[in-house]
Length: 113
Image (cartoon, rainbow, N blue to C red; front, side, top):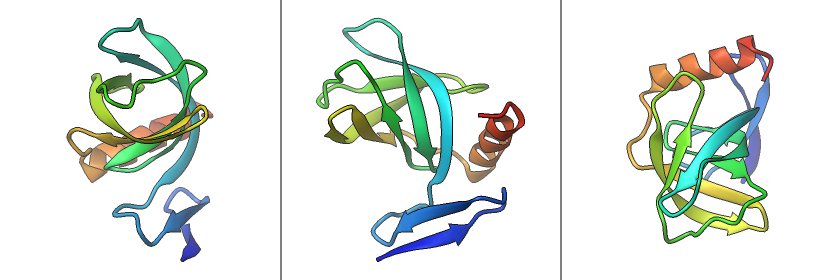
């Protein structure tokens, strides 16, 4: 079942009842790498305390951990849970604290991303 939820930042976000956490839509550039690759850019399209969705022009190996650098945070590890063409759904190794996520989203909104 799909629905729309009004978030505290004033924009609606879609959620799927199968998800554990609501995702907030964002559009910002991030840096990612896998153990055998160099750092490269990708686009973060949504984020929650448990994971995120990214778009990458580089192919990612779903069997390898990825490391993502988000604005204002240390590098975080994540597992790729699904991939479709150039989009990937990822789950953080360690979930973000809700206050950390809220701060990150407010910073992204502040800088117009």
